[in-house]
Each structure stands twice: as structure tokens, then as C-alpha cells.
Length: 211
Image (cartoon, rainbow, N blue to C red):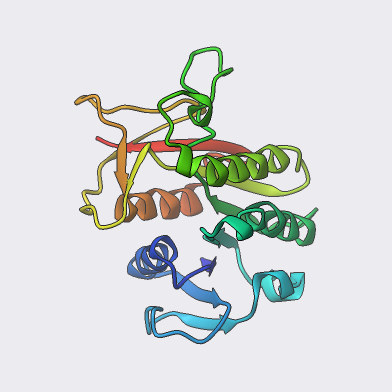
């Protein structure tokens, strides 16, 4: 399978590249500028996300969008970057897998209260979570794009262990048998490549938690 990873030099993107390579996939890292933070076994395309065209993405079965930005003034890019990708992938067979956020997950059975809207959600993360949630809302309208959105657990642990054990759910926050809602970046990468291979959640959001 030919897989492209946008934002491949970031913490999540680099582990997704590593996981895909470990399974024998043909992987291209798409980065905005030359970097040493990309697995040397991956091919590299140096191009800004907003300059990508369908001709750039056409060769790939799956495009993983691991774009991330954190500064307050850049947070709306979570929405505009995803819109750019969906615009160029409309009515195309290529699949778009999005590294999502947990803030848009629901905390009640009726799916009316989002995690970001609860009193316990940290104020400093609300702008980021809201921008990512808005991007998901727009993505859901894209019936002509083969998209999947993967939300991590509440605790998304950058340097956590690669256990290889996770369970998947849908729109609601998941907890494991210990009452924890957490997933490591490494286990998240496993779930992302599992989805790339198995295509179980086309035009759906799903979430995962370490078992």
C-alpha cells in the first residue's frame, strides 16, 4: 500500500511513518521544509500542505493528515488545512485519514455534550479543541471524500509505551477496565495503520483507548 503522511516530522506523524514502514508499506513523508526528523527509509516530498495538488496525492492509496499547530494565532489552520485537503480529494478514490482531537468526543449517551464543553476541560486547551472540533464538523459534510477521523483518548501520551493493545469505539469518550482514558502516540499509530489497512470506518469518526 502506498501511504503519504502529511506532517511526518511531528511527534504523531513520525510514529505513524515508522509504524507504516514496519509493516512493509511504501511510505512518503510530506514535510514543509527539509528535516532530519523523518525516518530515512521513507521517501520525502518537501511541500507546504496548502500548496499540495491532487497530482501530488494521486499516487497514494491513503493520505494521513497529521498536520498540527499550537500557537493561538495559527489554530484556525486546523480548519483551513483540512478544507484544502478535502477540496482536492473530492470525488477521488484516495482515502484521507485525519489525526484528530479528543475534545469533540461526547461524554453522554445522547451525544449532546462534548468533552470540550465540560467544566473539567482545561481552559488553555479549549481554543485548540474548538478549532479541531469545528474542522470535524465540516469534514462530516464531505460525502464525496473517503475520510476517516481518529480521535485519541483523553490522555494522549507522547512518550507512552507501544503496547499493541487497544479497543475502539465511536463518538463517545472511552475508558479501559481501570477507568482510564489514555493512549500512547505509539499505540495511536498502530490504530491508524490498522485503519489504513482494514478501512473499517469510512466517512466516520472513531476513537481508541489502551486496554
